Image 1 (tube, rainbow, N blue to C red):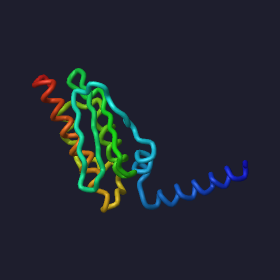
Image 2: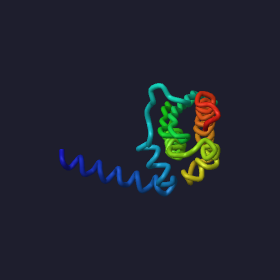
Image 3: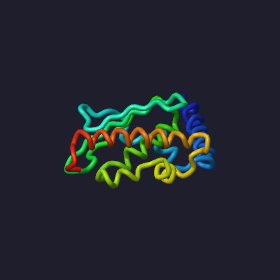
Image 4: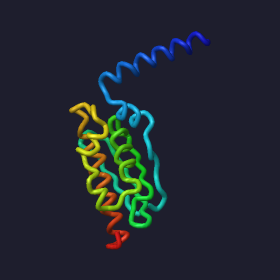
Length: 145
């Protein structure tokens, strides 16, 4: 049994090394260990969008003192969607609404670095869903943001 575990660890190490040749560390890390995954009860901002690829993304935002206090997401998408949503949610926390306007596809792709071209739409879906939730935040919280 111990021998099987050692073999499994060696194989996983080899897979990780190969993945690092193709993808960035940030993409792998956020895709396999996402930050801010989950929901927020009674959020100030919420959005749900299903992209043309079939992935659905939900974003939940809570504001306090004119800043995003908490940002969470859910998605049924692939590792690339998960990584993009994780980055978007992480980028938002502690930021004001004007600072959050810069959370767009190119900013997310910049943080993920090696996103495959055929999955760049995942960053767009994350950004669009985040921005829609942010607009709802502004509408709910009013002009004091």
